[in-house]
Amino acid sequence: MSTSAVVIGAGVSGLTTAVCLAESGVDVRVETDRLSDATTSAAAGAMWDPYLAERGGQVERWSQETLSELTALSTDVVTGIRLVEGTQESRAPCDMPDWGPMVGAHMCPPEELRHGFVSGWRYRAPLVDMPQYLSYLAQRLEQAGGSIRRHRYDTLDEALGEAPVVVNCSGAEARFLADDVSVDAVRGQLVVVENPGIREFFCDDTPGAEDLTYIYPHADVVVLGGTAERGVWELRPDEAKAREIIRRCAAVEPLIADAPVIGQRVGLRPVRSRVRFTNEWHGETLLLHNYGHGGAGVTLSWGCAREIAALVREKVRSTD
Image (cartoon, rainbow, N blue to C red):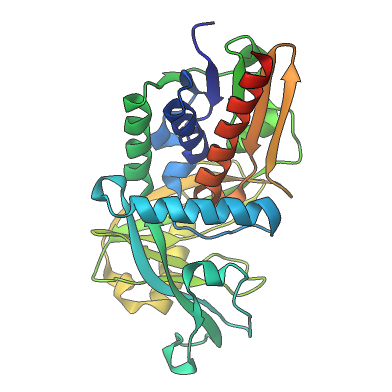
């Protein structure tokens, strides 16, 4: 075997895992049927936000570790990460989420809330330009000695003979690759427009809301969202949904209404009741699973990846 570890998937979970393995001295190769710019991660908004039903324990730890890493990376413009201030607001009375203290969040006074919203909290958190960030991770992986190969596995058994360590970061595709019917795709569509001068992010956090409404400003563009369609695997943009996204966002921020549209993105969030973070031996091959992060792939990425790198080092030492 010419490679010590194979990581399946070139989204944010796969690339971050590969970077952590490579930088800890592991000879690693990423195997992917879609390059990073065509993954769900590339279609994300995206910002640090523990957007999961699962709470506490390791999820909180992974979130905190990733927050620290993304904050540190935000000092380098090459990464595409910036610390941006803004609000999450609700049309119904709502308590601040339990992760609020991690980012110094505080409740908004009534006069600060947008029209129609009755509660909200203000904070500053990492906002990530995903295409730029994924490119940065790929370059960092290469600099650490890792590589990326365009290849599709139809079953995990095909990968188990490739290296002593295999890490499954296949996202929603794990439903088929790992035969895991508990993971499902939740289709997310967003619209990218020229930035008309927006500097703060906004997210509608109304409990039970049917649609996602968020405004994520980057330097020259604004990412507008979004949709959450469970069990829908269609990757082509829906023009009617795009118009509805713009309408909802413009109702919150009127500057959006006349902003020229640059493009649309569609991705499939890998939703599962719990993140699958497990490891098992298949003969002499260690198989680790790292998927099911839902809309929190970015938020959990470094915490999960570092833990995997530690597990691999521990397992390898125990077999020496």
